[in-house]
Image 1 (cartoon, rainbow, N blue to C red):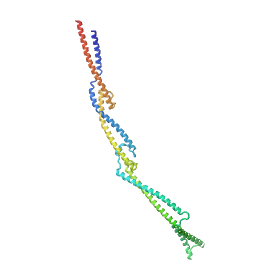
Image 2 (image 1 turned 60 degrees about the horizontal axis):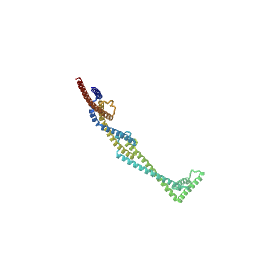
Image 3 (image 1 turned 45 degrees about the vertical axis):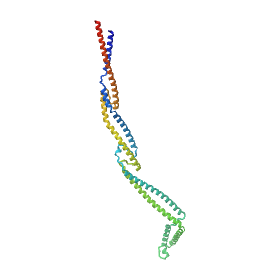
Image 4 (image 1 turned 135 degrees about the vertical axis):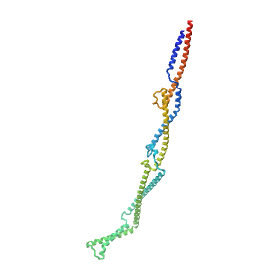
Length: 361
């Protein structure tokens, strides 16, 4: 009897412990929550795709902005690439060819002027040598000497012809001496010219050549001025062509390369916009996913989960559901053990009653 009473006491204590453990978990079966969560988790690739696109888009945008800023002229805003009105290839080729032609003319003119300057300097040196010592009896000097001789003769002529002339007696010898001197000078120059005909001819030739070269140089300087005017006009047209893009365009060659770079950046920007559009399109789906996960987190007993990012919320709910599943399985096991303990207690109590009846009998 004592053994039966002791067994009954132990069975009651065991049953109380098992029933107490069963009451610690009041949640229902987490299987339904797991089913809902698994359905929501199917959207996890959307999160990964959105995150990847957003990261790649940010990297691409930063690189494109850096490349745009490095252009010369620079493009300060990536969005402005789409609004640029670029010159046509025909306009670029036309002005580029004109710049090349003007530059060729400028170089040729400068080279011709340099050569003429050397030739002029050489001619001046030659003339200096020819007139060193006795001046050359050039045709101009002979003509001047004959002119002044003729002037003296016109003064002396009335005296020779016995005509009245308003000439004082004291000045008449002076006039005669001056006339004789001028006659001698003219004759001397004529004799010198005859004697030094080769030098005079060379002098006259060099002088004529120098004059021609100076005239040619003057024409080249005029041509140089005209070329500068053409260059200025073409430069103004070039600036007007790029007015909507930049106030300081480079050379035609540089700007052709610049346009190629801008076109490449524009193509890359269009790809960037496509990626950013995809990110924007995914945003409502991700927002809806977060709301569904937030409601589920409240139902399963998670608190303050709304501040957790969507991907973190997936991880948090998954871990919590696993813990609930373990608790639910343990509860089921405990309930089975409690049922067994009740049956055992009932058997012990039945045996005790039977034993008591036997003792009374």
